[in-house]
Length: 422
Image (cartoon, rainbow, N blue to C red; front, side, top):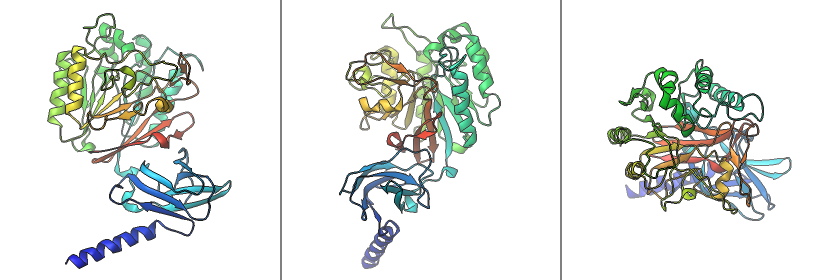
C-alpha cells in the first residue's frame, strides 16, 4: 500500500511538472505552499537571458487586459513567486522576452479560481458629493456613477461604502446618493462617516438613507445594520456608523457602548463565518501610532494623515479588543483617501493582519479623490478626475480575493492584490 501511495505521489508531481513546462518557459511550484488562488515557486525562462516583464494571461497566453505586470525577471535569473495572488480571470503567466515576443505557461487548474463561483462585491469610500469641483459641477457624480456602472457590467452582487458620501451632511448629497443607486441591479449600502455626522444628528440620514435600506437586520438604534445574503452561506456584512465626531475632547466617543455590544453579539454569533465590517475610520497600528495602521502612511517628508480612530479612547479600546479576538472579521475602512500606490511608504497601508495579531484589515481609497503625496512633500495632492479607486472582492466561501482597481483607466493593480483564507 505504501509503495502505491508513493507511486501516485510521484505520478502527480510529474503531471504537475508536465502541465507547467514547455521549451520556452517553466513554472516550478512549491506544492507545499501553493494553494488555490496563490502561487509560491519560480518562473524559469529558458530561451532568453535578458531582463523581461511578467504578466497574467488567458488560456491562450494573451495578456489579461487591464492588469499591471506581475514583476520583472532580472537578466539570467528566475523570477521568484512569493505568494503571488491569482486574479479570477487568469489562466497563465506570460513573459515578454522581446518587444513583440511573448512566451507563456499555463497555471495548473487546481490553483485557479473562477469568478462564476464567487459572491462578488465592491468596496468604495469617500464619495463626498458637493465637495470637489475639479472636473465639473460635482466630481463625485461622475466618479460614483462610473464605479457603479463597472459593478453593474461585471454582475456584482453588492456594493458597500465606508462612509463620507457628503461634504458636510447636506441633504442634497443624500439625495444624489439615492439617485445613483436606485436603479441598480444590486444593493448599495453605506455608513455614516465624519463628514456625514450633521445628517445623522439632524435626522436626515435616517430619513434618506437608513429608512431606505431593505432586507437587513437593524440594531436598536435604527442605523447600524447587518446584511446576510443567502448566497453567502452564513457570512455576513456589518455596517457600523459613526454617531459622534470630535477631536476636542480625548474622552469623546465616535461609537457608543450599545453599538459595540451589538457588534460583539454579531461577531460571537458568526465566529465560524466571515464577517465583513464596513466602518469609516482606520485604526492606529499595534504600537499606537497612526501612520503604522492599515489605511495610513508617513512619507519621508514626515506627512501622515492626522485623524485616525483615536488610540486608547474608551470606544477604541473595546473595538480594538474585538478586532484581536475575532480573527474571522474583515474590517474595511476609508477616511484617509490614500491611493493604493501609497503602499510604497508603508507595507501595511492597504492590508494587514499584523502577523495574525488582528483580524484582516483593509484600506479603501476614495472613489472620487484618491490622495497622493511625494517623497519629501509636506502636503497631500487630491487626484480627483485623474484616478478613482476601490476594491473588487470575490468571496468563495473559504477564500476571498481582493483586486484593487482604478475605475477611470480600468487598471487592476496586480502588485496590491490580496487573498484571505478562512
